[in-house]
Image 1 (cartoon, one colour):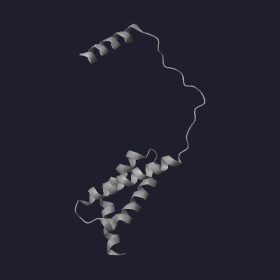
Image 2: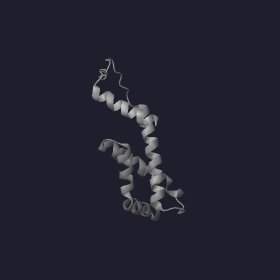
Image 3: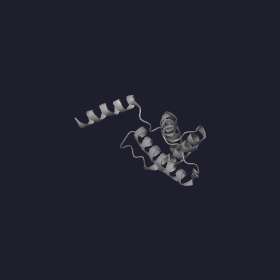
Image 4: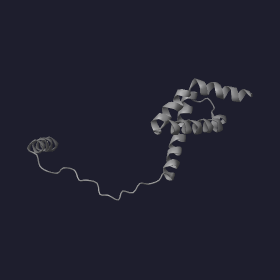
Length: 113
């Protein structure tokens, strides 16, 4: 294995938590998280040559992972199916309750002051 690959793998092992953290922030299911982590690792490998050491590796890795997650999320949103609701949702209870009205009056007085 080339020296560059070994260095990359070592850094990935040291900072793997960053990828998991970013994936948890942007994906709901474990399968989606794993897909995103794989995409982030691929992007990190493609960008590894551009890391010049001006910042800590973890900082650079986080930035690349975050940008990859945002792009991935934007691209997957385009492919999601939209749900069209044909039924009208029920309206909220709009009836007047004395306690509710008293709370609203207090709130409105506080906002004006």
